[in-house]
Amino acid sequence: EQFEKRKVAVQATWKAVEDSLNVKATKLFYQHLFDSHPEVVTMFENANMDAQAEKLYKTVGIAVKYLDDVEGLIPVLQEMGEKHAKEFGCKREHYTAVGDAL
Image 1 (cartoon, rainbow, N blue to C red):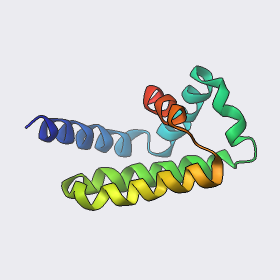
Image 2 (tube, one colour):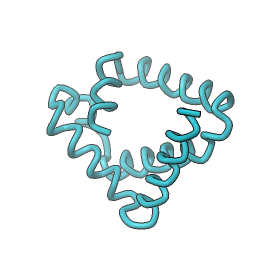
Image 3 (cartoon, rainbow, N blue to C red):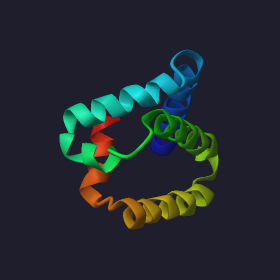
Image 4 (spheres, one colour):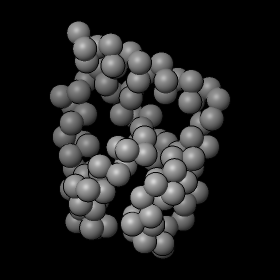
């Protein structure tokens, strides 16, 4: 029941983001992440941040859409996490920073 309540809240919040801010929301997220956790800025120094914000926006949208199939979503997100660890050097504390910024 707790998961169901959270899921509904996340879906409603994301709908509001889509209706009002869209990709601006993820641009604001990165700004907040960099302000609150400057140690991660160097991980993005070669990134096109407009493209990065767009990717994050699409990824979160897909994740929210598939909250009704969490068992199918988890392996996809795990694979993404493994890719980020391997290719970009992401560590557990980086995900904590992202969670804090959200």
